[in-house]
Structures are given as structure tokens and as C-alpha cells.
Length: 416
Image 1 (cartoon, rainbow, N blue to C red):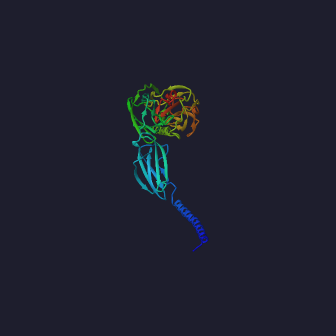
Image 2 (image 1 turned 30 degrees about the vertical axis):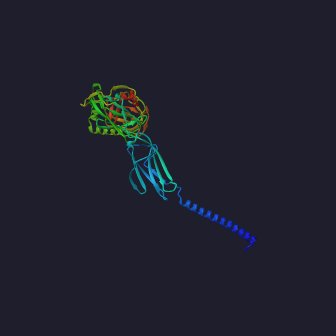
Image 3 (image 1 turned 30 degrees about the horizontal axis):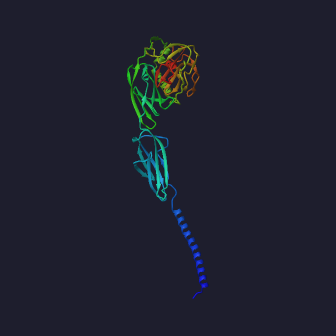
């Protein structure tokens, strides 16, 4: 039978052993928990899916159906959901196609009010934390066609004059065109992309009556409007009379039809050719290009001793040979040379379909493609070509039609 001392020693031993094992068990538990935590951390995904979107941009305007090209990837543990929201509400999606890892999703803006909207794309993975990637786009929806407004006074013009159409639209426009006399004409923005101008020359013999004028405007996202108006061409009373007796050599110049056609072809190319055709190069009113006496007004109906009867498509300013000739306004020289009928001539293209010509010069002081400024010396007055004396024949052409040059010295076509 053990003694008390022996019992105490056993208890002490037992207590010591328990303390040692408790510590070991604690260490083993910590190790197991730590290992489990490490495995958990290794196996758990904290990285959100990668999300790339094209087909939509912040701040842009859209109409109709908008299709988003969504590229989303999550290799571990994988993608759980892909949601498209409009103004915070999930959209009923049309799943158009899935190709090469790209998801094409679209929505129709025609059911939305015009104005600002927010589009969101949310990709969520399958991890325990449901990691998300989210992209926001603030867009402007516009499904309304632009409205056109044109002042009534723009819808009346005289024969031989320049029709100036000033058109206001209620939103920025990508382009505008006019159609008149079965021809299309470009309209150009003036000061802003909501205010356009179109210049059209009216021929001296164009019948005086009412014509349909159609304006078409397209806004920045493709919404189009088309309106037709009534344009009144009024009769202009031109001077009549005057008999011009050309000497034999000048009569031969006038009656050579082949060379006259070649002249007109060269002038026609010069009127339409410009390195800045869409840009207004002129500034303000035109100036009279030479000093002298007005001997024949624009549109005057004259008879020649060749039997030809026709309107005078320019104004004649008479003065001595060598009188300086100046550019009526700024532009680019598109012709500088000798013509059969018009003698030594210069054509300046002022942009947007507007050109001026200077004919019968004795000297030319500019070259083709040269930029000239208003009032710059371009030549000297002479008597070359078909003339009866020294003078300048000054002409203005708007979109291929001769118009009264003096109208351009009296009016600045920057406004109605």
C-alpha cells in the first residue's frame, strides 16, 4: 500500500504531465487552425473579375439601339453573374451573341426620355466574398429630330442676285443641305453648329416664279429632319439697249465658239477649285477693285454687231491702261493667265462656292494657288481679249451662277 509521500509524488508527476500535454495540445491546435487558415486564404479569391467594355463612352450622345461589347474574365472561381443597369434598374437584356469571350448586350433608347442617363455594367464572381467589378457610363439620349427655323425674308430673291439662306436648328447639327432647281447645295455653319448659311446664285434669266426649296439637316447622332418651303424668285428690271460695234479682229474673237467654250471650261474649274473650299475666306463686304467710270452695269441686255444679244454678266469699270486692280476680298487665286475671250484674267476663289473674276488686264501680278488679301494688288487694267477699250470686267459667281458684284459691296453676307 503506497504511502502518502508516494501518493503526493504521483500526483505531482501527473499534474506536470497534464500541463505538458495541454501545452502540446494547444500548440497542435494552433498549428491545425493556422494551417486551415492558410489553406482558406490560399483557396479564397479576393480579386474581382476583369471587365472591359467598348461600344459606349462617357459623355457621348446616342440614339436607337446601343450595343455594348463586354469582355469579362474570372479564372478562379469563375463568373457568377453579369448585369446591365440603366439608371439603377436592371434592364431586360437582349443577348445578341457571345463570341471569343465577348458578350454583346444591347438596349433600345427609344423608350427613354431624351436627356442624361447612367448605364452600369456589374460583373460578380463565385467567390465567398462575391467580388464585383462595376463600370459606369453617363450618356445623353437623343431620339428627337432637329427642328428647322428660317426667316421668311430669306425666301425671296431677285433675278441675278445672291440667295442667302440663314437656317437655325435647335441642336448641334452634323451637316445641312439645301435642294433648289434640282440641285443640291451645301450649307455651312456660321459662328456655331446650330446656325447655318447657304448661298445660291440666281441666274439673270431664271423664270420669276415660286419654287420648292427643301432643307435637310442631320444632328450629331443621325436624327434627320426635312422641310420644304416656297421660294419666290422676283423679276429684276435690267437695263436694255446699247449697240456694241466690235472691230473685225474682236469680232473674230467673239465668234470663235471653240475657244470660247475652252475659256468657259477653264473658268468653271477655277470657280469650283480651292484648297479651302469649305472655309469662308472672305471677310465682310467686298471692295470695288478699281477706280474708274462704270460703263456697263450687271445684267444689262446688249447687242453686238456679230448678231449676239445677251445679258452682261459683270460690271465694266473703264480707266487708263495700267490702272491698279485690287482683290475685292481675301481668297486663293485659282486662275491667272490669258484667255481667248477675256484676255489676261485672274479668278479668286473665296470659299463656300463664292468666286470673283478680273478680266482684260494688261499685267497680272499674282500666281495660281497664291493666297491674297482684300485690297491686295493683283494686276493692271488693260484691253486684252474681246474689248472696245481699256476697262476691267469684274464678275462674281456663286455656286456656278453669275450674280451682281455690286450687291457684295453693299451687303455683308454674314447675317440676313
